[in-house]
Image (cartoon, rainbow, N blue to C red; front, side, top):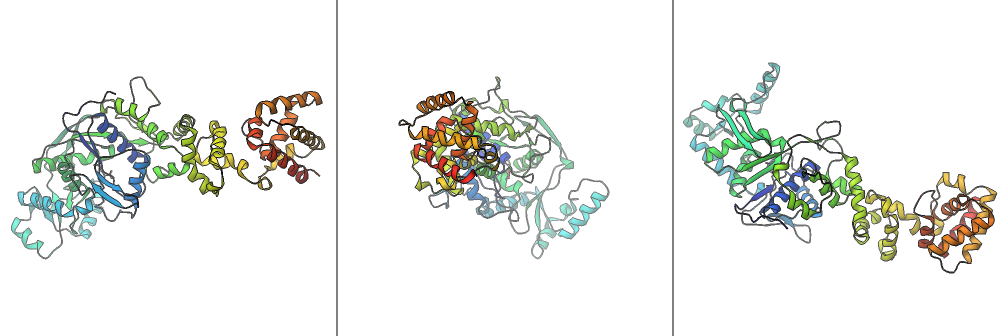
Length: 498
Ligand code: GLU
């Protein structure tokens, strides 16, 4: 495999905020970081950005880690889950959970304050709200009016003893230019950028400060993140300059859109990876599909193994135009993957779905279940369909559910009853109940009695399965086995015909 030896110690990170379930867009960011790191033989780090305590949701860090595990996006440093689902951390640059690093950020904020690159702001929320309202009324962009910038050092020190304050960044009034690997040169006008709060009055940092400090301390070489963070980058660059730190390389991944070109957001329904997992998407399919959102190979290859993705991935081939998240395509891809993986694996994935549907797995023979899944494989698009698709094999004969329409159409006339009674007799006499023998005998039966095959096949299928559609009739009979087939025909004859 063509993995380059890393000469510049590439280190990238995925830095989600634990504010609920992991969004599909977040997983794409994680994936691109992962692929970039593995391609260059570098390190992939997980860092939890949980300093905004108002948005924090209990359990979401654990959930996030288990989703990354489920997707097989192994990382090298960060918080991990042990056997009991408890978080532990590994790596030389930890802790990797920002709420455990608050003192570090405080020190850096104070450092900037001392150097005159930041200032204390004593404005209370009421003033800030009024300012915002007036600006909106005057059709101005809402931003802080730098009211506290000119308070003298002495006065600021004095007031800080008794009044709550935040620490704000002094944005320079100049153009800020940087090079983005995906977008090329990007320019911002510093005058139009807020004097960002770095440290809140409760001593907690904002995203901007914590993010930059950690990227520096954790020796991150490439910041690969979603386009929504592009407008934060000038603030980050100013921070790097003020601290005198080397600036990492930036790559902002294109936005994900719905097919109607609206923004794919957490709020627009089920876009959490968890939801897709519960629907019965395979992680391999999700990963393959997400890799194609904003990245492509020259020959537009569609299917990739993980190794191929690692080998072929490059930021140079990431597009800056938004990518449409097309559920239909992902569903199609999922069905393809279901057909591709071994039935044994498919069985393992389906166990939780069968259990959820009320089947006690331990009551069934594993080989038999695998056989059923194998028989249905072609028809499965989502794992959650499996219980329904195989339930008529598993239910006791008396409990098979018969479709109303099927009963009316195929289990109601005198002729149908006659045919079923005759075919039952035929089946009783068949010794080798395998599909080849069954097919030969049943076709012969049709011919001898001058029945069109459909006249026999449909009632027979409905009688043993309760459904009009399903796998091939002879496979169906063979898998069910003689005893069940005969039993079900008997039940049907007694139950549905007058
Ligand atoms: N915590 C940010 C997020 O939730 C990270 C943005 C970045 O990667 O810098 O996505």
